[in-house]
Image 1: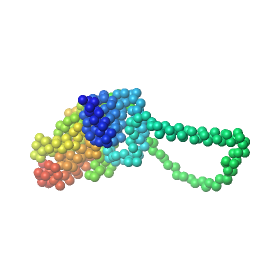
Image 2 (image 1 turned 45 degrees about the vertical axis):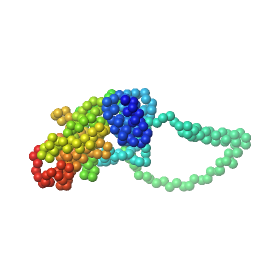
Image 3 (image 1 turned 120 degrees about the horizontal axis):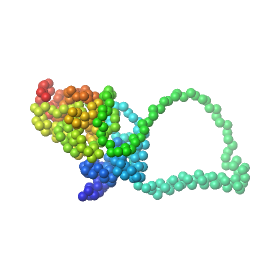
Image 4 (image 1 turned 90 degrees about the vertical axis):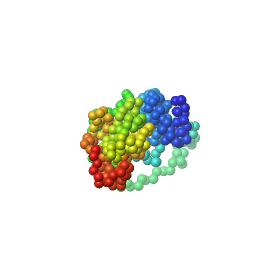
Length: 343
């Protein structure tokens, strides 16, 4: 049965249907976190560089001697280093179309080896021809082949401005042990740069995301995820469920949350406070190109939070709620935009 799933995922990847391949592989790797072949297929099924890095690191954790995975890891980290960092850019921005994210490759083709040999033979042949001419005709033969040098044109020296280069970030080191999400504070909130309703992710603090598979939706703002095979409960930062008067039992909000994240691969970003008093991880959540916290508020199925420790995106969530209420989106259709609701 397991081999059938992996074979089907492999066929979908070969056919270019990566989304369906991911839908098969995410629950499989969650149930079989030590399956090297499954993580290799997942590496080729995802498109975002950080997700590919996570998958290839898992392969190397399972089998550090996997030479193909080692080469893919090196190429991928080199590729990620070449990308110019941008402040306040969506963390799910696609890589430039001019470069192709490397895949785990098979052995070099015959054509590749042939051209490598030609590059070596041509200069060696040229040197042998020159040596033969000297042996036959003497050193004067060189004057027939190489024209007399002409005086070099006068070079006008100019003083160029000194440009200070910003060092590139170093490649992500391979983990030595199976990592788990940190439960220590990540640092103080950062000032949002360019955050707006059209660019909501700009308010999210920069930092390396943790990748997880969503195994259950608890309510409109809480999910259960699997990280390296371990279960965690995640509470969305900065938002709260709508009052009971609008969404009894939180049913409709939970349904929309399921559509956004259930059985999908998500990226988790922390803020100032790592977990709440119930032990739930507080995170900004991204599913593909969706900023889930923002989507629930802007669509009218959650509201901006109050009295929360993490307030980096508080203004943005408040603006999104006001717009949803004004346009009577989602569950706000059942109440006047100016009405005051009890919690």
